[in-house]
Image (cartoon, rainbow, N blue to C red; front, side):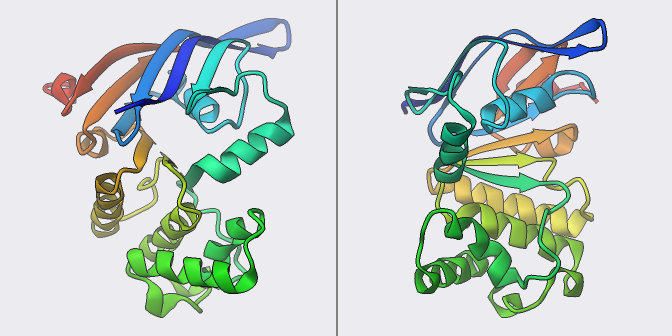
Length: 235
């Protein structure tokens, strides 16, 4: 498999008053196309900053980030927005659905920015809802659905544009156990189709379901193992 993500000696420094906070400290990371990766770490470990880097939501203070062979480290905001729109599907803990829109319209929204015609984007949105088992809820608004259903709508929105990367930030953080299992089942099935899945989580039980688990501490990678090997006894 080819390398989809290459992070080389990335540093991220934030200034807070007269102090400097080193969120990432010379971090190096490679993720291959089709991998299912969990990134774990406690609050303040740097995992959220790393997520922002991976999702092209922020740029490094120094170092390089290659995404599918392109150096995105020094891109303009407009260029980064284009990369995000074309390459990455985002899933957030808080769902981020628009309350006034039904499920179909929420899922179709990112396709508008891709310049997809209305007929085609509604067709793609309906297919995405079908994949997450919510075709019959297409015309229900978020308030008319459970938390688990809302998160499945968010998953459908992330995959409607058919991006090669799905970046999920605590995707099960607000869900009950049944909904958590369903969302993870969907993400695993997407992984089997060749999508690259990256989950940011503090939940070790969720992390163990990924094929590769990376632990961040103090802005650096503390451990990196396949099949959750390092998690044994780490509870």
